[in-house]
Length: 174
Ligand code: NI
Image 1 (cartoon, rainbow, N blue to C red):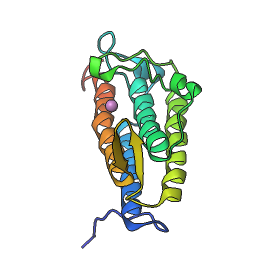
Image 2 (cartoon, rainbow, N blue to C red):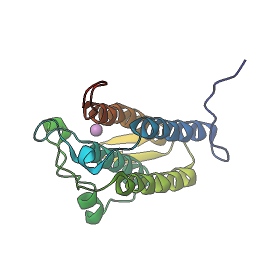
Image 3 (cartoon, helix red, strand yellow):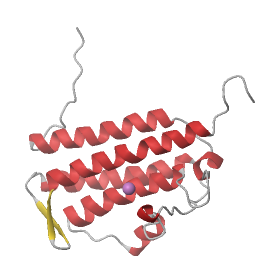
Image 4 (cartoon, rainbow, N blue to C red):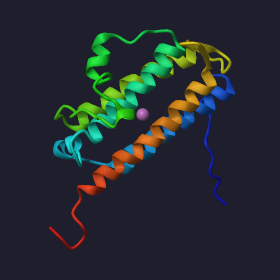
């Protein structure tokens, strides 16, 4: 019998290790499922101001940096970060998504990876699920912040995979 498990990252608090392992597992699954997509597919929006794969990758990364780097680790995001990740141009609750840069996936994924590397560093250093970050009038535990980023990425990654599938020709058709 093969056992299926999620193996916590070692060398940190067990809850932190489990959440870090879950976060990387989510990323691995959707990036595998997305596969290779062209620049044209990355910037494609099914209607004006709609989601695109490119804007979704930037948004997933940006939200991770906001909650874990700024709120969790107390490292404010820079203006350069906000411009690169289209933070202000992305108005997801108003249903407005910007047209992302026409760049290959080999440009987009390292943006996500660089955010993830800083996340790992910050979270490993904090290494306390009860650590509290403040935003507005609320306090957020590091445990909740990691949970939130895992579910946020899982929520948006399926949208990126769906957009890629909408661009593929139906089988038997050109
Ligand atoms: Ni979002």
